[in-house]
Image 1 (cartoon, rainbow, N blue to C red):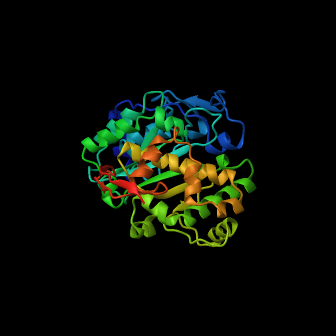
Image 2: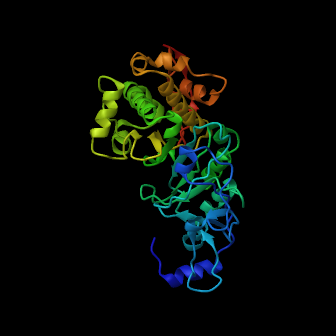
Image 3: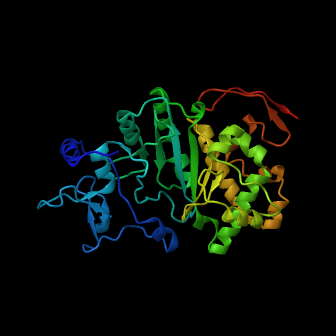
Length: 364
């Protein structure tokens, strides 16, 4: 979005104080070294945003009136809101904040697209305020040309426990539905999940081995994953195409690395710090949303723990048997609804948010 300087300055003077939060340190610092508990606040390297009060590194500050004495010290997130409202540009990418137990090294960054309710800064602000507080920013919102009558909600990296127990996803989804938005039935919206690479192995070699297993698992169980995703084959080929299975996990990874780079793949490997699971259709049904995150986590678990030979011998039934039911109740409910539990089939009718209106399950 392009606007002239005078327009931006006028908006800067009239904007309300934003509800946004503390930040920590950059992605590489957090994952490549010992995890810090707070940002460096030495005066020579850091300062505070005069809008939200959070500590920021000096080289991350923005000075809208830097030519004038006494210009405010403003972080990038506050400046974006001041200039263009609560829906940021597609290319907006703030320094991530990591949520919950830092001893749990697996974090999930979620991108949830919604459509059909309008490109509304009013609704975006309401969603922003449900999730965020003055000192605690958990999400930001971006425009996306694939959802011209909506927007994309992006979470900062959170542990699975945090997504399930603390993050207000259910309240956000209820508000979006009440505001006229859809996700599952739009045919364009996706639910993408980023997982930090460092949770997949302590060395680059271990990470590559785990990623190879993830690719092989998805390809080897493509029909099951297609059903789980709630996408059609046509939708998948457009937004999250498969690579094609080869003889073993490492050959699959070698094939992917040798292919022309493209992010519109079921597993996007173009990000330096994360592996992106792109195959899932969007949803505003909370159980389906949590089940999707749990599925991604279980795929990562099995990919980390098995050798390539063990992965090649892993059946779908074996995979399901490794999943703890007590910690993954939403996942097992969803697998049953979709007929993806071993020896169970289903004949379901889904509403426009991806929820089950009618569920008929029976033994095969």
